[in-house]
Length: 254
Image 1 (cartoon, rainbow, N blue to C red):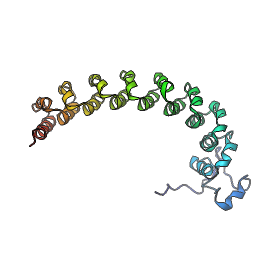
Image 2 (image 1 turned 90 degrees about the vertical axis):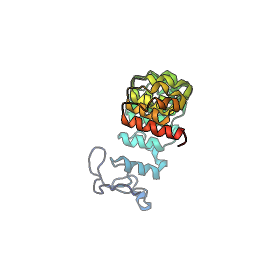
Image 3 (image 1 turned 135 degrees about the vertical axis):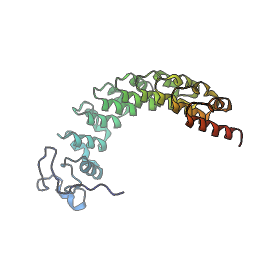
Image 4 (image 1 turned 180 degrees about the horizontal axis):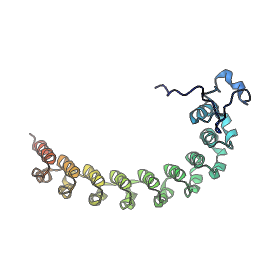
């Protein structure tokens, strides 16, 4: 798929000032196409153009880790030798620190787990494993915790069943072992309960047949065993009754 067109005449640096190739230290690279004004350029303010520069010239990335523009430092960190990145753990910009967290060895990443910016802590949660990852479940930011429950071993997920954010609990309901799933059927959020209804074995859905939410009862009608589905053929909602009737026909081999 072709990339979206970029305005070729917009060649301004990160301060908004126009520039040209006349005073560029990489002018000699233009002949080989490794530096193209308005498309592949480390001096441009557009991140895509900077990234193209480092993709084609990764050997130069280390020289830009102290550049004044945070996008340059971030994208240089993406391509530079990992041995040059520890100093970026204290970079003033969270985007730069997050990129460092995505590449540094895990021992270094664990040291960044208390970073004041959520972007960095999310990056840490994407990398860490074991106890350091589990510790991040205490984070005040819901997306950090969501990243944690997406990566934790399923046997550890019961610690997250009472999380205040329903999106976190929904993720738990999708991944938690089946023998620990049933209590989430009493969750106050119907979207969490629907995840439960979609995963429990057919014979275990009886307690959800009287759920106040039509979506949960409809799911039970589609998946339940004969005893459960028979209770739903008289449901007050027509969609549930129809689903129950169709399920009974399947179960009875008709």
